Image (cartoon, rainbow, N blue to C red; front, side):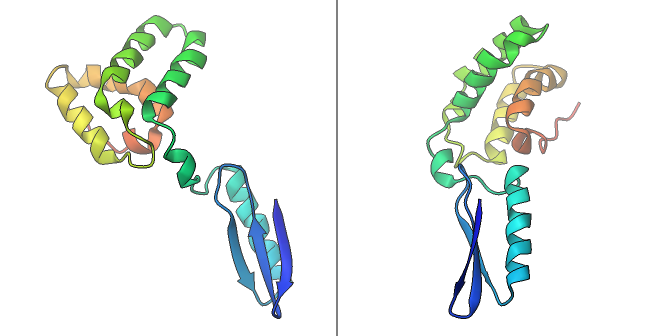
Length: 145
């Protein structure tokens, strides 16, 4: 929800959405403030704004994987195999990391460790469900054949 108020001869637009930090900006003209507020609300609707850091500090990657395993995976034909893959992923230390500090480097380390144990094609298949959960990390990983 956006609000616009006049302060000291300028217009301050503020957008508040649950799960996102409050965003505000000042403008000289009212029409500019309204346009910015509308665009920012659209970005929030599309989940293009950065999520609130406090929320990311309370959730681990394992929490997301467990929720995906329990809610999404049972509806798939390959739920048994995918459940095994997800449970194996949950045993790894990367699943205990908070989302606020998780990076592509962590996934690269995971990839390198797993490539010592399994073939590249097997790793691709095992990362497929994780890619549904954390695409911004997994999509950037090159896996050589």
